Image (cartoon, rainbow, N blue to C red; front, top):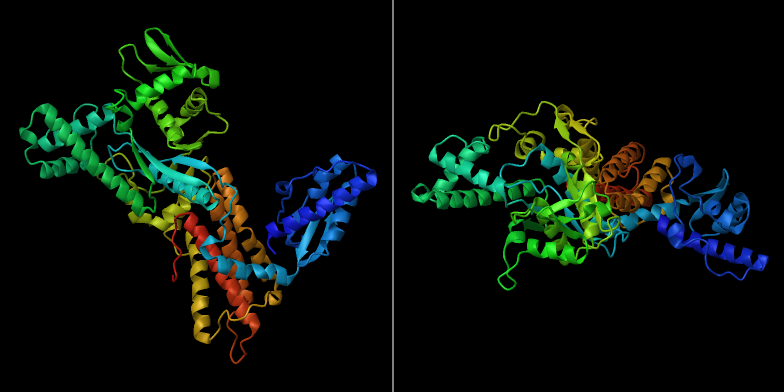
Length: 560
C-alpha cells in the first residue's frame, strides 16, 4: 500500500464518519468538509510512531464542532479494519499514526521495479504549459562559472517539472542583437588583422582563436570593405561561439528545447511591414498601459509594482532593451506558454519587478503567469581563471577538473538562492565525504548485488513481501515510498536540491540494510523466498537512486 492508496481509503472513511455525524445531528448538509487533496500523509520524524501520520481529524474538528481526539479515535478505529494497516493510533491532540503490515509495506518493492523509470513521476503539474528560460549567456564569449550553476539548476528544474506532468520547454535566449555584438565583431576583426583589441572590446586568447578561425573560413576577409569585413567577422565568429556554447552545454547534460534569437524580434515582417517589437508596443498600448511623454513612449509599469515607469521607445525612435523584453515575453504567450519562468543571476534583482510589471501590462496575472528565480553566486576553491578568456573561470575547465557528475550534483544539491562554495578536494575524493560518490557508490552496490545474485542463482522468481520484517527493511521501504512526493515537491517549489538530499538519505538507509540483510545466503545455506524478495528490494532501491540521479542530470554507474 502506497501513501496515495492509504489517503484514498482514509478519505472514504472520513466521508462516512462525517456523514454519520451529520445524520446524527440532523444536518441536511452533504458537501464534504475536506476535499481529497486535503488528505495529506506525512512520515513521522520518529519511525517508532509508525509509517505515516495524518492531522485530518484536527482539521475536521472545528467545522464539525467536535473534540479532535474523539474524532481521531473514531477514524482510527475504522482505519484499522483496512487491509494492509497493522495499527492506527491516536497521538497528541488528534494526530493519527498509521503502521502498515509488512506485506503491505513490502509490496512497494515490486511496484517500483515494475514501474522502472516511471517510478517517481506524478501528475501534480499536469495541464501546465511552462516556458523555462535559463543561462541565456551572450554569444560573445565562453560559458563561465555563474552560467554553470544556472545550467545545472535550470535543467534539473525542467526535469522535475516534466516528471510531474507539466509540458515544459527549456529555452535559451540568444542576445545576438545590439551594441555588444558589434563590439564582439570588431574585436574578432582586430585579432584577424593582428591589431590590438579596440577600446571597450573583448580581450582574451579565445578572440585571437576566433580571428584565426574566421580568416580560415573567409580567406578574403581583409580585402573586403571595412563594413563588410566587420559584418562577416561578426557573423562567422558569432556562429562559431554559439556552436561552442551549445556543445559545452550538451557535454554538461543540458540540452535546450529552444534557442531563441533576439534578432527575430527586430526583423521586419514582409507582409505587415512591422517587427515583433513594433507589434509589442502597439499591443501594450491597446491594453491601456502605454503613454507618450517627454518626446518618448512609455509603459506605465508602476501600475504593477515597478519602482518607475519604463521608456520603451526613445524620442529618436530607437527602442530600449525593455522593448525587446516586452516582445520576447509576448512571443512566449503567442507560442502557447501559460506560465513563464525566468532563472536569472544574482545581479538581476532589478529585473524582478520589471518583468512582473511587464506581465501585468500584457494582460496577464503577475502572481500566476510569471515567475522570476534569482540564483546566487558560486565559487570553487582553488579554481584558476581561464587561459583563453583571462578573466573568468570557464565551464569547460571546471568539467575537466572536477568531472561533469560531481559538478552537476554539487550545484544541484543546494538551493538556488544561497551562495555556494565548492571544495574540489571533496568533489574529487572517493569517500563518503563526497555526496555524489556516496550516492553513486550506493547505486553501483545495488548493481553488484544483482550481478552476484545472478551468479548465485537467485532470481526474482518469487515475491513474498510479508518476509521483509527487519527494521532496516521497514526504514528503507518507508523512504522509497516518499520518492513521488519528493519529486512533486521539488517541482512545485522549483527546488531540485530536495531530490539530491532525498537520494542521499536513501543511500544511507540502503548501506545500513546491506550490512544487516543478506540477498545471497552464506556458505551452504539454502536459497529461500526471503533472498528472492530481498533482491526485489535491492533492485527497487537501485531504480529509485537511478531515477533521482537522472532528474539531476547525473549518471548512475554500474561499477565503481
